[in-house]
Image (cartoon, rainbow, N blue to C red; front, side):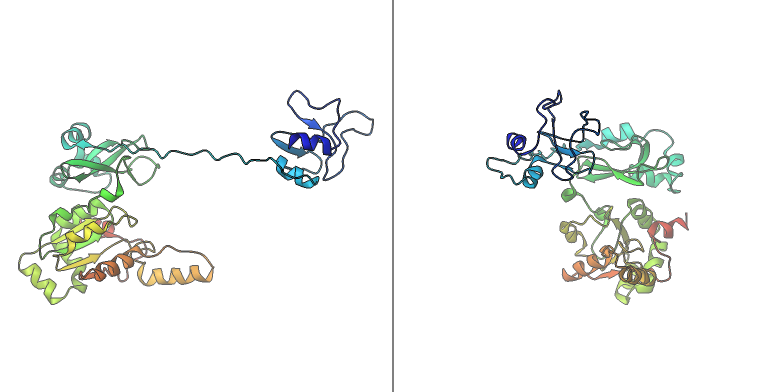
Length: 332
């Protein structure tokens, strides 16, 4: 292409090519010659193997485009092949509980966690909540840590920011979403009532605060659900860790429950936001803007389709973005 253009364009032989490999001549777009009014050479238009540019009309582009302008044909042009990017290999996190506790459960954890929520020390120890720099993460600041177990190994760590703006909740690298367990689901027994939320700390507090959790779902409970509680069954609060995380393998953990309440946050991506959320969706529709689907509604319908007594938790008159954390926080 370069040799074809040299022949087709009015190239200055004395100045072309220069030390940078640029050929100077007349711009085929604006016709400006490469000499000023005094006859002195002036750089206005040039091209090279990297493309062309005119400093008068500001046209620029590839040799392919320039050749089309001057009526040339691409005979032997082969596009440059795109480089093949190898997918990075994810190294499994593969940390034992002993390794985790040795590294991340030192210091006054009660005081450290009180910066976020007043969690009883017994719960902190029972659930191995920790503190430290989240490994394999873009954040280098210490965070409150929640270990997520897969069998006897730590599958990943969830880190809650308390002194930085790197992101509220982050996860350590190396985990596989398809192997992610439903947090706290190991506590569900046959006949229990399960609540599915987003935040693992809310799941810990909700399972601990049985009376308050029962009060939360009481307006929607049926006589059968009340009988289950009278007969000694519990309400177990679980957490998906994100509305975007769901594994169908978790459904097996919910099959023997009396009922399942989906309690994602009271917003558009979560449970839909109730009445206020509906108003917001209508406003976004009028403005021609997109809005996220309500994952809580989608999950409720999915579970019902699998034969599970699933209900969308009604937040009633609670404000937008109200969540389980706000509910339990009022009792801490």
